[in-house]
Length: 350
Image 1 (cartoon, rainbow, N blue to C red):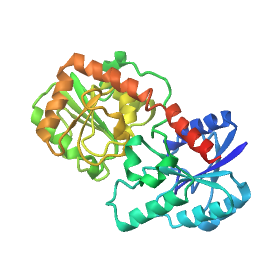
Image 2: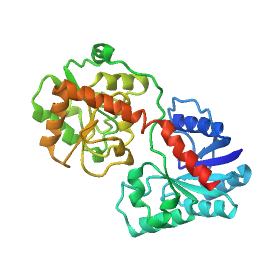
Image 3: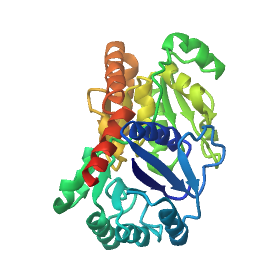
Image 4: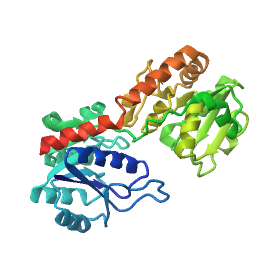
């Protein structure tokens, strides 16, 4: 049985636990054993860990001890360049005869591409036996000479096949005192890169009392309190089935900036998505402009408003986009598709 160690930098986030559980079961069926190592688990974790997991000191010494103890055949690195143990551990794994696999963006999209960034990328890709990317849209960040060892594992979430029916839409909305006929929803942290102010401005320009704006997520600094009231509903963080019920009871998802994994939740619930051009995470690949959502010019509030109104008012278009969104995430965005990419990379290095 092939032994695989996946190094998860720092702490293990909640959403990754079901992902690793699914990946572990998938690999086990192919006679491979997955172990995940990290510095701990995000506080408040609601998931049971049902795969081999090791909490260790995330340092060169801590990882050295783990490599010598477990003696894996393959080491998968999900580690950012800011962690200084990355290259020493990568080189150590190679010296010990272990196969090394990179897993990630291909480049840190949140930062400018500095000389250090480019050098670190090239060095890691040269040392790695295989490269797993979040999506085919990231291949452009990999130098040509390394593309023969690139494999695609579409980044996604592990979601059940459960369908949250919109038949109880009125009941779900009433729980949050939402009274508007159509509703645009945003879910996530209120980060600056997500350009939430553009959504607020577009919604205000609509001057439509029948269209609500639902904002779900932590408002840690209270900056959005002045927008609360009327047909803007600031609900705070909501998790689990309640979040999916609320998404399914809404009509359109809007995230003007930095579309990431939240698109998976939105499409899973059949919500078309509207965003702006600009820098996004690899998961933007799921958005097909004019098919399951819209992409408008960056900073064009008028176009943002127009596309949101179009989807709110055109029932046939919205329903068609909704079907396409759900179909996209249940095929290209299904976790089984992601696992196939891991399989291909592991078979290649083995």
